[in-house]
Every structure is written in structure tokens, then in C-alpha cells.
Image 1 (tube, helix red, strand yellow):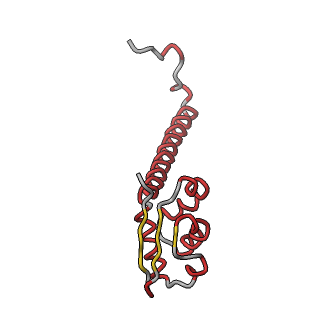
Image 2 (image 1 turned 120 degrees about the horizontal axis):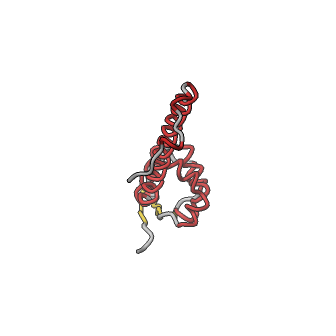
Image 3 (image 1 turned 180 degrees about the vertical axis):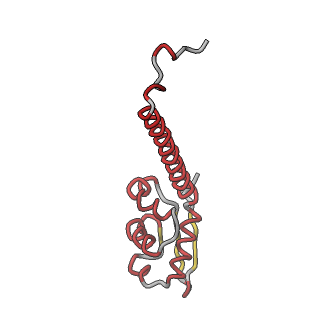
Length: 136
């Protein structure tokens, strides 16, 4: 399977190629890339492009990027999003999974605290070893 590429034409006839991220790019810039997966931000996009521009883009450098209009940068982001959909979906999935685990852990802590509070308020309800039986 080949690395995905997308050729785009910006205003003024400038052509650029957006290439799919390599594992090295993801490993070295994962946190920042994760921020991009949460949604478009001009500041986040400019920051990550400055870092990964050489390995992911052909036909444009950082100085040229800084001269583009926000609409052109958004077009580049949409192309980046298209060729890196698998990575961005994975980040979104992992973040969703992490959030779900945090919610479950919080609920378990609440239940545990409620049980501890109930036991502390009524010590006669505490189970003892003779009231606990093994399943048959």
C-alpha cells in the first residue's frame, strides 16, 4: 500500500502536494497532531505545518504558507484531513475511549465513596466473614 498523496491547486495556480503522515511524524508530533484532530484551528495548523511541512508537503514552504489567506490554509487543512483520515479517526477513537474510561472510573469512585460513607454511618451493616458465603 502506498502513502496517500493529494495534489491541490491554490489560488494563483500554485500547486502543492499533501502527503500522508509517516509513523515517524506521528510518533514525534503525536500530541500536537491530536490537537488538530479535535478541530480546525489556524494557530494549531500553522504550528504543526512548520514542524512537519518538509515531510508532508511539496511545493510550499513555511514562509509561503505564512503569506496565504485563511481560506487557503483551510483548504490545505481539508486536504491534510483527507489524506490523514485514518490517523485522525484513530486519534478521535483513542480520545473517546480515554474519555469513556475516565467517566467509568469516576462513577466507580462515586459508588465506592457512597458505600464507604454508608458503612461508616451504620457500622452494624458491615459484612463479616460469617455472612459472606461462596457461590454454590
